[in-house]
Image 1 (cartoon, rainbow, N blue to C red):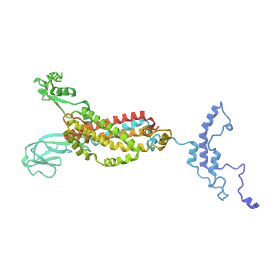
Image 2 (image 1 turned 30 degrees about the horizontal axis):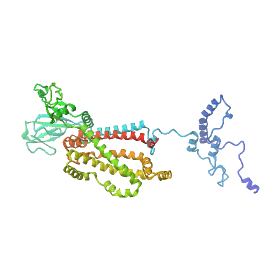
Image 3 (image 1 turned 180 degrees about the vertical axis):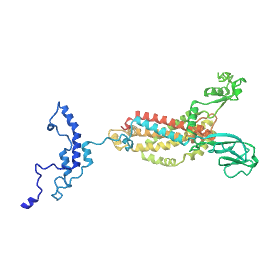
Image 4 (image 1 turned 90 degrees about the vertical axis):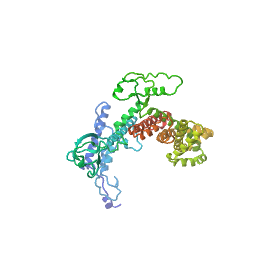
Amino acid sequence: MGEEERGSEASPPADDAPPAGEGDPEVEALLSEVASARAPDAAQDAEDSGGAQDPGDVPERSGTPPEELAAFAAAPEDGPHGGGGSSQPAASPAPSVEGATAILGSAPANPYAHLLTIRGDVDSTRALALFLAGVSFFLVAYALLTYSSVQEFRVTARVEGGRIALPDPTAEWIRSDGPDYVFLEEGRPQAPDQFARDGDALVFHPQAEGHEVTFRYRVGHEPVLSPFMFPPLGDLLRALAENVAGDSFHVSCPNPDCPSKAEGVPVVLGSAAGEALLAYRAPQEGEPAPTGVTCPRCGTSLDGAIAVAQPPYRFRNGLLATVGRTSAGFLIAAAICLPLGLLAGAFPPIKRFISPVEIAGGYTPPVALVPLGAAAYGVLNSSGFLPDTSGEIVRIGFLVLFTSLWLYPLTVKEIEDVDDVYIHTAYTLGASRRQVLTRVLFPVAAGKIWQHLRVSFGIGWALILLAEGYMVPRAAGEAGIGLFMVDMQRRALMANYFSALVAIVATGVVFDTLFGFVGRRLFPYQEVS
């Protein structure tokens, strides 16, 4: 290599040359920040060693020294050794945020980031808080949608000059309080029995001059949801409390001097007293035993009085009867689907043999089987069964059928998903085919099957209105929450109807919590930390 070539090479920097990056305000600011971040660590090390140390004796920390950081900031784009073909030093790039973060440490994490983490979860306390927050949100939303400030007024006034001034200009829903006059939504009255609204007054036919007219009107905010279909939240909670408290009965006191006679109101009895009077009136051998029920107004014995149950009736008995029906249907379905699903998941020929029933049942609407249930009810009655027994068989059979159509394919899936390594290991250890089924396949899949059982229990509750209310005719004395809801719907008592719906949801939450509690005890390995 010639002298000229050697002279053209970049000479190393002199010893008294300034460090790379000096004079760059951004690099100097970054170096100052690094030094201030390291100062507490150096002071702590000096204190731990028993006294102050000379700055030169402080050991180097792991990480990037300031000199290397400055050299990196001043290095050419192709690297610190050049290689880009140019002997001129490149301009110092701006220090990166990533480099500073690597030295100074990451920023504190967002305390709410776990709520948006994919498959992230919260602890049990926060889970309960989120559940209660969701319940509160829906209650507030329902209260706002059903809120009403409507007040109804009844006014009697005389027609003067063919008009009656409205007491409130914001009046709505104007109706005559009697059959004498008809309110016209549009137009002018053309007959003596008609009247209409004209701004802040009601106008009448000339022949109504001097007559007194009684009319009603409403003032206030109408709810977003129809109060006929969706009762206000206060009425709903009040109906739920009354239904849970028990049945009420009306009875006429035989004492002519009872205060209820003077007031013209019946005597109200609670559930126990009313049921006792009903049992007293039931046919029995010999003389009926005294009930001990007395009038709460005057103390007269009510034995032999006629107790009349007031709607809603047998709410609590109906809820307990429904719990029994859904539990029976669920247990029978589980007893069928668990062994059958185990065999179908382990032996594909069995699965293919049952698949037509599985496919047909999966696409069959539950309401389509109502006529079939009625036919089965008639067959059972003609076979000698009592009507109430026939009804119970049909209702529980309907719940068993549709719970099985949900539970069976999920059981098969979990058995099929067991890894073959468990089967091969069991055979290697000398296990028989029965042992592989009962001690390998089912125990491995049991945790997930339990979760499917937990969900399948809700299928019966989802179909209870159809099973109890519309599947078969109601026999005398039968109770059920579905029968109760159908009765309240026919009577247009929507507050009682929705209170039954709330009771179903609350019962489902209780059973779901019990399933979760038992599942955590039986299969603790299913919990994810």
